[in-house]
Length: 228
Ligand SMILES: *Cc1c(COP(=O)(O)O)cnc(C)c1O
Image (cartoon, rainbow, N blue to C red):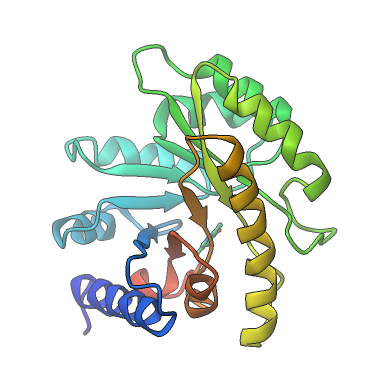
């Protein structure tokens, strides 16, 4: 059986190769290990192999695992799922980053609910980059107002943007979606000094994302195996 440590190494090698093939050798691309639905024992195994950044999508499940792993003091938790209003307080209390903020109402609640003893909450705006009806994410026309709201909130730091593009197996189509998000990222970066994170790329489209300037890919299946 292939171990989590071996799967992580394969993922990091894949990222390094994509950086090399994109001729962006100076580029740093972080790996977020997406551990949703997977038990804390597997997360601990990944941590012991050197992984520090983990992504979760379901609030209650994540809060339980964060408690089980509270002895790992330098682990970094990213919330990447849809945020319902009645769950925002738990997200504000337990996470280091939130990548899925898509409306002012949720940004306001996270800012109000962030415990004062914790560092500011790092925020990415999720953008509905292909304008799909079914997807969460703010529209391109709402992006500026939401960015300004977050950037001026005392307990939040606006770090960048995230998207889940339209499903496609064509490299060209994947790159086209990611290029749109890169444009958003560059525009925000020219306005706000705090912007440094372009979160795009999953198990299926890491190469396309890195070719368009991704600084963080989010990989679940390739590290922890398929989800039920
Ligand atoms: C589940 C999920 C991922 C990981 O997807 P894989 O295909 O398993 O790599 C990445 N990003 C988000 C927002 C997710 O919900």
